[in-house]
Length: 137
Image (tube, rainbow, N blue to C red; front, side, top):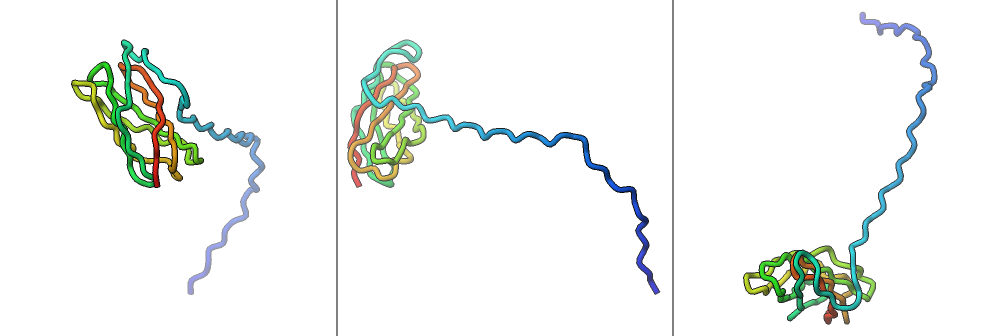
C-alpha cells in the first residue's frame, strides 16, 4: 500500500528586515473648470468672439447648444452647470463650419435640471463666453 511522504522539518523563516511600503495618498480629483459669470471674448489663438444663438435642455435627455464664432472652423467645448445641485456636465465637443456656425450636442444634461443652467463655452480661436439657458423637465 501507498504511504504518505514525510515532509522533513525545515529551518524557520526569520522575520524580514525589509520595511513595509508606505501608503500612497489617493490623487485629488481635478475639478472641471467653470466660469459662472460674465461674457468672454478674445484669446485662444488669435482672438474673436463666440455667441450662443440657441439652446435646448430637458432633464435626463441630451441637449444642444448652437453657437456662432467669428472665426470659422472653431473647435468648441461646452460645459453645463446646474444650480439645482446637479453639478457640471462633462466636456461636450464640436466644431463650427466654414461660416462659424455649429450645434454642439450635450450628451449629459445635469441631473435635476429644472430652471436656469449656466453655459461655459471655450473655443480654440474665437475666445470664450458664458451664458444662461433654461432647462425644463
